[in-house]
Amino acid sequence: MTMTNKIDEILNKKTKFIFITGGVVSSLGKGLASASLASVLQSRGFKVRLRKLDPYLNVDPGTMSPYQHGEVFVTDDGTEADLDLGHYERFSGVPAKRTDSVTTGIIYQRVIDKERHGDYLGATIQVVPHVTNEIKDFIVSDITDEDFVLCEIGGTVGDIEGQPYLEAIRQLAYEMGRSRMMFIHVTLLPYIPAAGELKTKPTQHSVKKLQEYGIQPDMLLCRTQIEMPANEKRKLALFCNVREENVIQALDAQSIYQVPINYSREGMDEAVCRYFGITDAKPADLSKWEHIVNVLKNPEGTVTIGVVGKYTQLLEAYKSLNEALVHGGIANNYKVKIKWIDSEKLESEDAEEELSDVSGILVPGGFGQRGTEGKIKAIKYAREHKVPFLGICFGMQMAVIETMRNVAGIKNAGTTEFSQNCEPVVGLMTEWDKDGAKQIRHKDGDLGGTMRLGAYECVLAKDSKVAQIYGKEHISERHRHRYEVNIKYEPILNKSSMSIVGRSPDGKLPEIVEIKEHPWFIGVQFHPELKSKPFAPHPLFVSFVKASIDNSRLL
Ligand code: GLN
Image 1 (cartoon, helix red, strand yellow):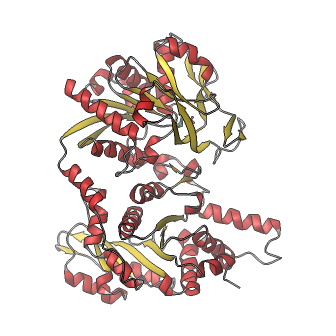
Image 2 (cartoon, protein in one colour):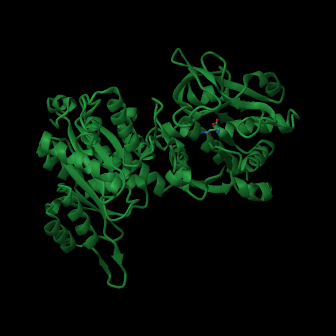
Image 3 (tube, rainbow, N blue to C red):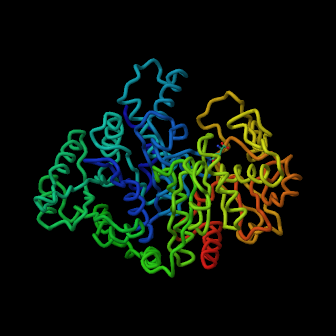
């Protein structure tokens, strides 16, 4: 018995599955490709859902270094997930859930839990069928009336870790029927300048590898830096057993927002409809993407914003932040140029010199002590020179510490994240409220999945700038942190002209601070960048970019 009960259930529904695999090299942008296709299908009236299957052994990327994995994306329900889920949300607008992201770590954890519980009734536990069944259950679970579920398989075909996933989707296609499944393989056509040619051989080999696993791709999405000649398309179709009109060119794009438009132009969505025998779908409407691309091509001006952080060598670590700033720019018809400033270097540099050419300063989230004094230096500069400032999570904590040290005069103000020998203005949170239930943590507890994670309500002060910016007094934003500003310091902060203008509904946790005498100085304990979308920019970013533009006019 290989068919799981969940597959029986899904057989009665209309949902179709599209699997996206990658070949030849990593970093082909499968996440963006999946998100773009989903968005085009959406514009044709289909309901979509996007999922990521990550073959690594970590339970989630929450404990991985940003240098390894880039940003950790957080969903409303508190899942720490791959940054591709960020692309999915930004392009489709569909909030991702815990059931949209899985890793081999989770799959094995589930299998072992069941084994310990005796659920397998004495069987020998094996990759096939036990691990593959668990993967299949994940793929088909929590589906309601979606027309399409797009599942991206992380890694590259041929990786050892990826094999159980390929076996699982092969089985699914067999069990559910090929008419409900489509396999899209994303590959690279390297350009050899000396020969002046695009090479198809790596793609041919990669497809052969897929075929070894019993998977015949139905479409090839070929990343290329130059136009793909018709004869190369024909060649790939013939050697890879794919219909010629399903060999789709994915030409390098200037902006990621151009990608859905390009794919549709190349006939990708039409090919998907054709594959599934859908003849009555409305045509794609990509006007919202066209508008965005237009603004990016013809902005009214450019504004430079300095982002002072620790991971400036690896911009993937600030993916959502980068995007949210671009969105804030689009809303103002401006191009945002980000000046990445290494907070560690700033410690020994002249802050005035480094920061004098930026019109706004942003200190993003972060962990650990390295580079913090550079961040505090940048915040001091922003406060004193009246440069618009946005502090996010760690950035807000550092802003509070800066005011405590340099305005209130408490020189040893600090956070217990690095030392117990400080005035603990920011301290470890061991108890808080989540939807009426108490959350309890211990100092030496596990690190994975134990932060204050996901969406929390926040109440804004009536007369605050943030209430004006949001246009309401009750908001919900996503969190990912272990430490928190201690509210008992509120009277000192108030005397130092910093106000707490957003708090948890029980009033205990400070969520937002503002300096009223400053043109734009806001620190938030949550991550607004995670909810910003190109066609629904986050109000804080829209307002921060606007303030920076206004400031640039004064420069
Ligand atoms: N390190 C800080 C904490 O855990 C801030 C985390 C963050 O910026 N995401 O509270």
